[in-house]
Length: 411
Image 1 (cartoon, one colour):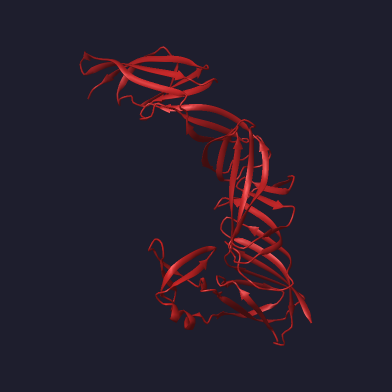
Image 2 (cartoon, one colour):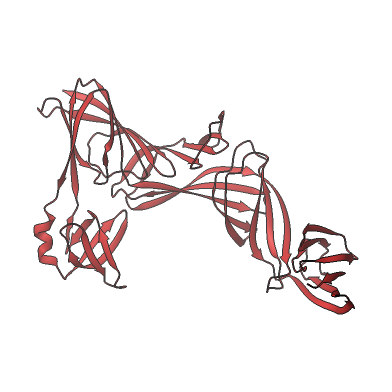
């Protein structure tokens, strides 16, 4: 007798399991959890009203279990582990432990409640809960068995629960010269198991998302559904994920609008302005939050974090400093007018040594608390009581000079 089971798993990572005849596995990866569904064939083992799941994840939270297609009466998680009797002989010796895809080579100090060891290279002390252990060619993998007492089983059973083992990192590549933004998803499989022929959906969302009407479109290899603070990428092709590995998958590619400028603050010690790229999302879909790596032709020019950028909104990226533009400032004159009044004359010299035009913003942020009568040969914008901004369009290989004065009132 055979029954078909649909398992839905919800977590920050995927569990480690051993089940035969898996088909139709689907995973939905959220920022802090993963929803997995899979169809399994369950053979009748002769135990009435009981389902046994061998090799269930050792990180499962059994209080999160939900069963559809039967009446769940109780759950018991059994740890199959005879490691204590073996580890006793390895106290003070080097062992290798593996936890969440990370490998630890360490001297074993304790094993009773947790595995405690001292790193063989750094001397750092690690306390690991139920890691997998390798001892001189013998691999000790902790296994759990879940036994569910059920009643009224139907042909299809739906089981959901929280565990660990898989996650995703959203990144972007911005090509300034092509005005193109690519979105990538790097999937990490730390389950300790190979995952074959799985369907994948990736969800990027704010931690406190709001409800919006959603829209859907089709990309070349990904279907996309979105709201202002949530976007879904569904891969059209099923993929394989090897254990303890990562796979980088292109999720989206879109044209964007860019405005480039250079910004300088006079309090800075450096004489070189910062390159700033203002990105405007002119596409129909939201750009998800993530790390963006910026390239200008063949040169890597910087990276930054971005938040969600809905259609029509802008986001400024601070990149590298440019050494082709030099800003030199100085107090040209300073003299007393009496009655605690001091007149100061400021000179700012700018050199553009590059072979392209540069839009430059100079923020003079060294004004005193009380001042009056600022006179300048260049147009300026008063940003605040202590800051004025000058906007310059510098031609290639050009020089420009700003001279302005103001009267400071001393307290």
